[in-house]
Length: 243
Image (cartoon, rainbow, N blue to C red; front, side, top):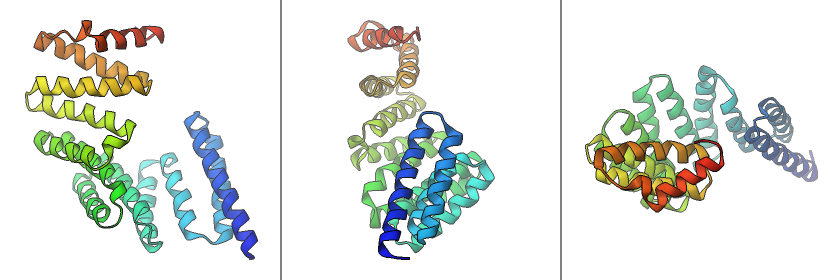
């Protein structure tokens, strides 16, 4: 294999894997899987273990739970062998989510804490993703104060710079404060989450967050429904036929 052949195969593999992501986002899942298979064959021909791990990571979302769990655990080790700490952190997060979905709560937390330690040591740009996922896990366990602490840390370690994750963290902080009977603080975070959802034009997030705020309005006797934010969200949903 020449250097030129290696470069051509890897470049084409990248193009195919990028196209697969576009197809998946458009809902063309079968076509996306075909493109990933083609990309994988090119990375395999090039003998590039790092990009093989990358494309297999993309394949995780198309596999049933048990298969995805097995592959995610393999990817943790494969990224480690490639000295890709960022990839390993993401694989640990993914396997933690799969473990949680299968009721393996202790394994999920163990992987997230391992991801947190690795991110702090070698992939600080991934730390906010780990912290926000840890916040979600503790939220699901109804350990609301711990969840709020982790979500706040996530915002201070990079989530505030990621528009999508920022809004998500605000919404989860709203849930956490609602869980410890602090509805006023919960409302403040939900309002921030709604503002972010409107900025990103995320209709599903706007609909969900507005519904939560309308419920809080009844409990707090607040003016959300007639506030600028409340009216703006109502208009946004009406324009899309969601009200």
